[in-house]
Image (cartoon, rainbow, N blue to C red; front, side, top):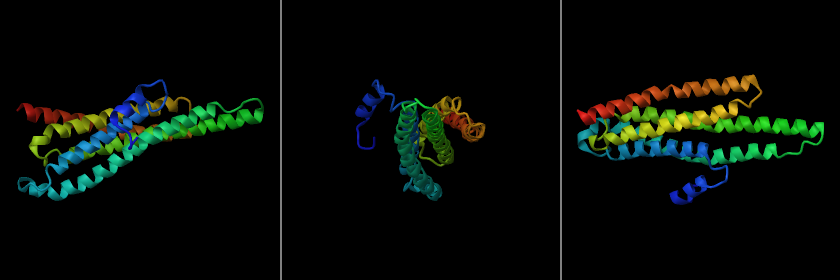
Length: 207
């Protein structure tokens, strides 16, 4: 998807094919949030008026760029993980041995299909945290973009959570379910910060 246009990718998303789907969309949303954090940094760095925030902005910029690339990779990985589950369901089941192998493959595929959106959720939570770090020291001309970054990341977080949950219900291993659910709940705590950032920006804009 890194070599295709947005229009082409959206056409694929809108098609009858099951992938890319909501999981990939969540990854793209996280990547957009990270890109907006980078933009805020780039439009603040080098301005004498914001010199006291220069070091922090450069640090955040590097992290935002890393997260943007990771989110895009996860968007691609999501489609592959879903395809793996579909392939597992298509395995033969004529004998007991084939049924057992098919079940094992399905369960492994479901764990992987949940792990990818969980990773997206973690990335989205980190993007929200970066948005919070740049809020006070950013160039006021891009203040609204800080909120949009947090909003995009929040959307990615919520969307990724749904994609984790839909796989969790079919995973039989209670330990795996608990591990994935616990990690997801931890990432979801960032929603509160995203909402606070958006509220703070709106308040400052309207002041």
